[in-house]
Image (tube, rainbow, N blue to C red; front, top):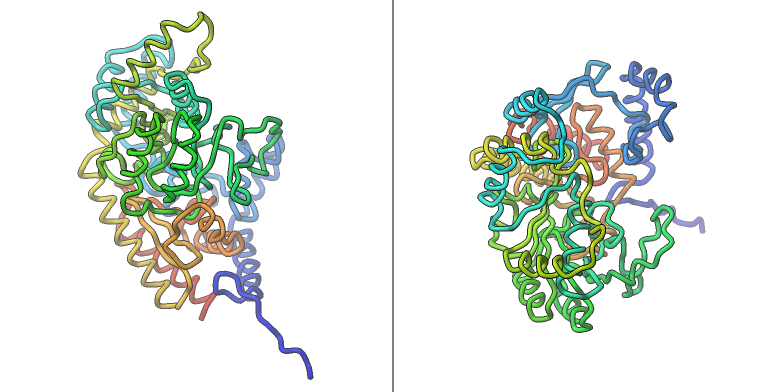
Length: 459
């Protein structure tokens, strides 16, 4: 008897159909953007692999579009296409491109100097606004959240005298070496793709699964953990929500075993005014946020409670003289403070967050209806203004499940197809943000395009 033919599926989609769809959408994209293709061919050779920052290679299109201008929640490329932007610089422009208060602040400060390693009155006001918005922390300014997390860990190790940081499997805290570890057969290991990594990172880091309090306690019992570093919600992967009681449990365990709790809100600032920490009344020892906190100008802030500050000052006074290993020359420059003050006082407002929440709910509901209508084995998750569709059943509970849910072939095809229909979403995963500038018609266009794509893939 002849062998029965079996059809391979990926995330519920026939693999041959997916390949045909991806080829068709890539061809459509390439044919529609000749100016960008010609410009890249002529001018990109000065850059390594043709891109000024290597992550730009993660976009799935045949070649990159070139942006001519951006305003609000819209991009225009050099081929003349208007694009509804739900990527928003992967959160860097979460409040929209060039919010007017930030643009004014930039222009004003540019007339008075860009950096001079001294504070301004604006810096003092920005500090007060940080406390008003995020809580009573003693603040420091960095340029990126990677730097802020690095510095926070130095303080944690200094005040506890312990060597290790506890992170969660699948986490992302920027390009910080200490966090580039994962679980392999239940044991911590360096992530395999790290470029030029020669050190054993598990000497200073250990790993648990998100939502696993028993696993966290087993690691804390060893007595060598200086800090738990976590996002309130796992992002930069297939998004994983905390289970009921998880954050309360982390807080209790960290106090019981003498570890500091560091909350990194760089992505979850989308959760609401003051971030997930304020919305859900978390009480970390240290707090980090970057990306959009200054309206898109490279800025991060990190702070510590009064108690941690007191302990650190005692340590700092007693240590030998010399470099602290914290700080970069251009951090805390007046341009950062001008944009930080404008964002905190005029952009990061209750009214803007209310608009973002309402739009994100409209988006998540529409995507969920489309998924259900086509019988796709997918789900949608939302945290405040941040929405993701995940090409697997849900909900997900930890990093291992999030990694298994990632479907690169499907996501690449869908991302290119969405751009062909006038919508941009984040290239690394299926993340979408609703900004204060995002209109209902943009959200509805995205939902309609998504539904059209599912029709082509599944019906």
